[in-house]
Length: 137
Image 1 (tube, rainbow, N blue to C red):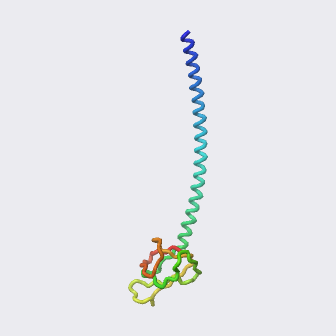
Image 2 (spheres, rainbow, N blue to C red):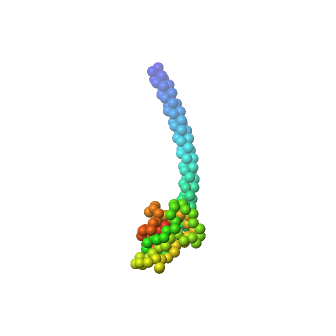
């Protein structure tokens, strides 16, 4: 009799194990579906952010002003961050290194909307420039 009772109890436990296993598989599949959906959404977001970054980088490259010569900025016409300028408007005079007077200075013009040194500060009258010095409009 004890054997029959034990066999019944074993069968009941095996049925419980099968039920719990099926629940585990169902929950695992639901979780994997949820994670896969989230991953797809994240991939879409990454794609949108990459496009936004590419647009921002293109805008930045298109709005960089580079000094034509190594020298110092004089007669800075743009003094306010965010100041709007017109095409061909004189923005500054750059006096080349080794020149005592601004007679040989070159004129910088752009369609920029603002001029800012790449280090995040306004290019002032004593700012040292090199030919590769970038000014961000």
